[in-house]
Length: 82
Image (tube, rainbow, N blue to C red; front, side):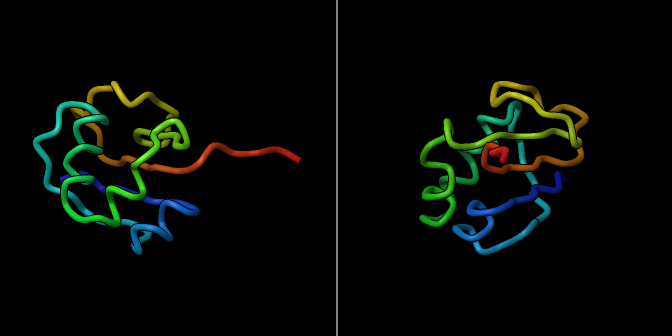
């Protein structure tokens, strides 16, 4: 089981701040594919991966990163400074 967290507009599109996911995904990209196949709201949230960042166990990562041993995956839009 992996905890999946959604922030900002990702959370708004999916309608959940977090959920526990049972997954066979080997990488973040595989997890995104699994989630996107669930429902249209997930597909909409993950439609443009260039507009998303991902963190694994609170460390910024890439979509091709392996999920082995990971407890938490967080998806969020890039931070803008000001």
